[in-house]
Picture 1 (cartoon, helix red, strand yellow):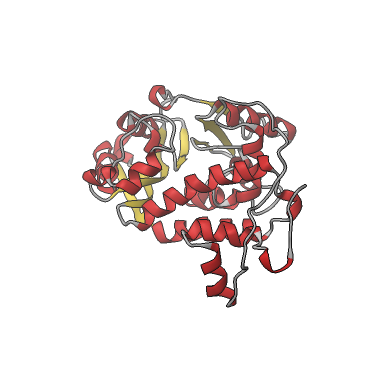
Picture 2 (cartoon, helix red, strand yellow; picture 1 turned 90 degrees about the horizontal axis):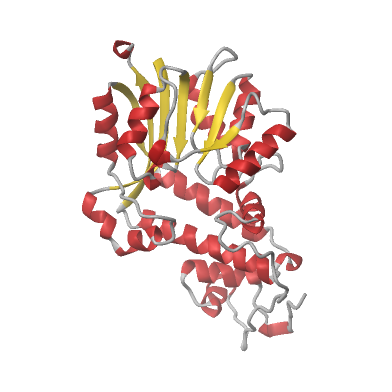
Length: 319
């Protein structure tokens, strides 16, 4: 590994990364934080070894490995999205699930949160994931842990979502619906799949006003997402669920909490890096992820994009 260090002209990688993240010159950051800066800062030199050729995959092995390290709070979490497995369990807690109930998670990812919740409650949760690579890996892990019946994971197309009617006691979908082109179809299908008094919990990114989707920071973030999609406002989601006959229990702007969760995870991750980590492949994976999440955080900080949590219950009158 070629990560050189030469006395007073060395800037640690975590400082360089923090400076990039905050849009600040590394020298200025060092002066601000430590009162001194090197006279001739060196560029970071890393291995030039080639990585696996997995071009075309949304979730190649390197990205899965990196995101697990970034977002997992425990090595048993098996997640690639913010919050660790505990966040999924916390979101589903209001459903009051038990061993006689079944529910679905339409944002299973690698399935860690789905499996942990199903195991802790001795219940059944069918996991669904829109990315085929993740769905396949998640199902392999469910089989490995003997959870293929309690927490199976399969791939689905949100634009052709088909669920059995009046089957589930709860439906969870976190940070996925914004990418769905037919949000109306998704919400109607999810509603119809619920039993009377069944719970629907949704977290998603929303714009404050429809015109905000054209704000430069939001367009920049959207350009990093696969496919074309339209963003809804928080009120559009709420009205559509009410019109379906749902009893709205929570419509909450949790942008500040979500932003803090993202920043804490990145801070924890960067603080735990070692010189041995800094291969070219690792840094490439890190910078790709960092660019996406930095764009999202900037969009949230603009005030034009928000993170909302909804909790709705299917009414008895829908039976």
